[in-house]
Image 1 (tube, each protein chain N blue to C red):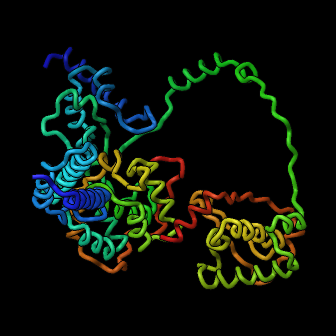
Image 2: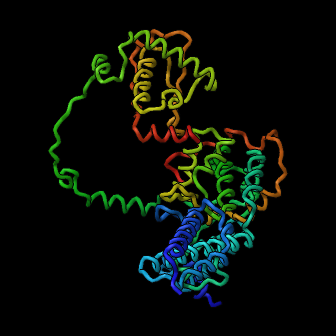
Image 3: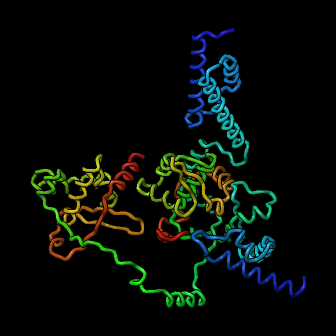
Length: 207
Length: 275
């Protein structure tokens, strides 16, 4: 690669980094067409190179396609419609709860795995019933509203809950269910996470 | 061969029954595989040559339309079962119930890749904002003056509350004392750490009763029978009864805490309670 070309690529990588890391809209991340416009049609290659830079930092560029199913070989049109994020990739860096309360995160985990097992759709009533097994009733509704607000879930007018864009961006659903089914049931005596070891998320903040 | 009226009537009834069963399946109240598609098609086929009137043909088309929807649901069911994501919901539900919160968190952290996002100002942002501020016309120029009539704050007397049937004619002090005892009993039964959720205390079967309870509760707090513990972050309000009324509540300058008791809030609380 010539020095001039290398320089051009370095500029594109910088631009992509700024667009991916910094908040531009209400939702995090950036749409493919925005990258296309700012960087050019070779933006998928630029993102690959950026991904190589991010890998040693336990970060990765994630793509969430418009359709629920990820295409094997996405076309540039499909990529333009997709949304790109930077996300943590390694378990080692995730030894903390990212500012979540242990109850709230456990509730989210339960909700996502339950909805995923129900073909991606479950009635709010069923989810509330399941959550209220371990979370006080008054908190169940608050939590569900919070998960909806953050983009993990969405709700239709028939009170059916679905997994939303943030779940598709952040959670490996297949892995979650596999791990959950293979997890050994232990009594809650091993307190890995104290109830109050994390600060609560501000109501107005997105995670 | 002409079909008798009786036979036509029976055919119509069978088609209507098929439509009803299909609708139940579409509304997810019945398993899609309870319907034997071959049997239904043979029934539709049997009667089709004898339909003459537009209503009869419409009924036939409707039955076929619903049958197609059921076949689609059956196909989706098979697809889901054969996909790698399928897990028996009952098995998973049991697993979720048996897994401790800590284990649930450990599992989730292994499958969770939270998005990284920065919010940071740059010098350029600040410069742009200053430029915007300079060019921004003052509010007086942007907002048209709206003619709003001033309304003074109102007050309501106990007599008026009695007249509106919010309060009963019972001696107010007695009523308040009885209500304080009720608070103490409820807190002992349902509360944690000598406090009870505000809505769990004031919430009643009807909205009117709830408002009345909220009204009395405000007096309990004002007259030093109880106090409120408000967590604005968690959006929770607890009420803590005192063992003896505290007179200082009436003597020191207190802070007013407005708590909205809207009909929507009451409905939300009631739904939560039913769950």
